[in-house]
Length: 438
Image (cartoon, rainbow, N blue to C red; front, side):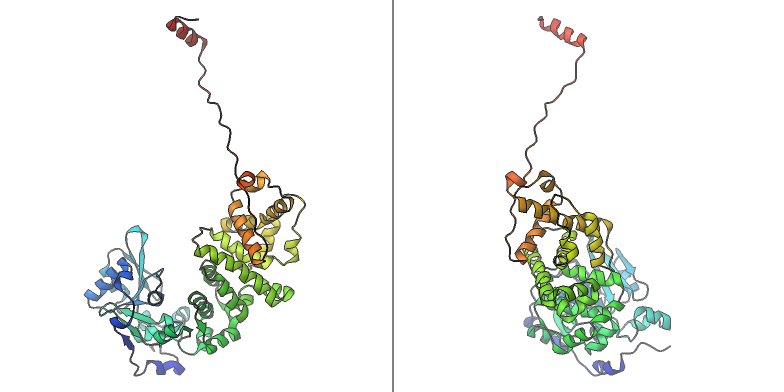
């Protein structure tokens, strides 16, 4: 049976190519910045004769002086061999299997076997009858399989060096986002890579190199070919990243925003590209400032902030203004469903987003009248709804709302008089006789 070979036009990448090895004195990664449990996994693999590399985004973040969220490990050990080394571990996945190693406190270290470049996706390979053994490869092949050059760096625990097959170190120093291989082919094979390129440009402040950017703009509509839940999970990460305003700017300028959210494309046509871009990025910029200050916010808040920027100029949204205090939750839910179609969310999150958005109208009414009714400020969602409202006000260049404790704070409740158990007449008489009084 034929094995998965690298694509013909990229096969030269694997021929007679030696990696650039950056020795420990020439880079800034220290073991003290690596997760303790990740070091345990790396050393155990190394001590049993296997290659053990820290791979992907964790190496990139460490080189940028950031604390990685996850520490992923690559090795030449097969999943069964990895599992035998770690008692508390589990193999996951159907075809390309990974090993999750479990530690105290619920921490999980993901270990994967080096994978070769394939011209087939996993499901396609199953249909073609390609065996699972044929997808494992060398570190070089695994590096060229990755999406961006800055994500293709390896940290070798054996000698503490960085191994670079793809020119990622040079791009990291120059501040460039570049695909590994030919951009158009990479994006057509997996369009989600376009969203990842935009994400890393927003989070790192790097610029996207011209060929990669042009490929994103050309093939933005191909994102609709990807599974809806997968695309949803990608953009939800960006809303909470603290760099969502820059991300939104890239998404709008490249055409990805309209491809991911068809309703946004219609709104842009009505209100104008620049006007729409200004309000959405301005709203998310205020949210990013809250994230950087360490403000604790619910997941629903980020979704509500993203939606409010797009809804603000819609006639259907403006028509919800009322001459009395009311929460148009049903109408808002309808607008929200249309705006975020075709993505689905948990019912609890969707309901909370609708409540936060519908609360904007009672806040507007109380602000206009100068009188804050108790049924407005006593709601559990009021604190976040007010933060959301002030984010919009600052984005529009207007004064934010401040609710004084006398108007918006809860009044102290009157203490109830404690009621003791009523004593019977016989018990009262006994007490009188005992005291000798009437």
